[in-house]
Amino acid sequence: SRIAGELDEQVKAFRDRPLPASCPYVWLDAIHIKVREARRVRNVAAVVAIAVREDGYREILGLDVITSEDGAGWTAFLRSLTARGLGGVELVISDAHAGLRDAIAATFTGASWQRCRTHFMRNLLTKVPKRSQSFVASAVRTIYAQPSASAVDTQFKTVVRTLEPHYAE
Image (cartoon, rainbow, N blue to C red; front, side):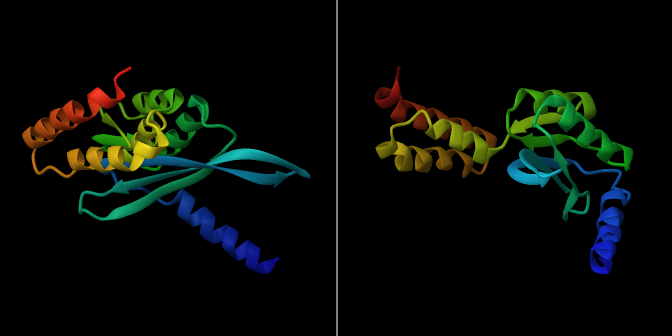
């Protein structure tokens, strides 16, 4: 239809626009969804890249749909961002999928990588009995709330000492 055609033009303009030459911080994530394609329903990953630009504002860099969250899909997505001008990436925050981490290393040479807090917490809490998850999550959040690196280190050690006797394997 005419309306869909107009939307297609807007989406193409968004997806093809030049990107900032310097985005020090980039977050990557995906959500798995079911789509109908050629009369079949299949699972795909909708991937997104969000950055903090040099001026401090956040910007959605790109969105795409890939067939699986493997290294090839992520690499193609990240290369499409760099082809549009993205540079100056110093830190990438994401989940710890091996393919994703490999794609980050191949595309953003020299950038540091950090595990996403949300994914880390989800993975951590799968190792904790259900009845203790709220307590453990609260204790771990206190580590992130510290004002300095030395305070983080001190709080981390305190939390580990507190939790270790209860959850040591």
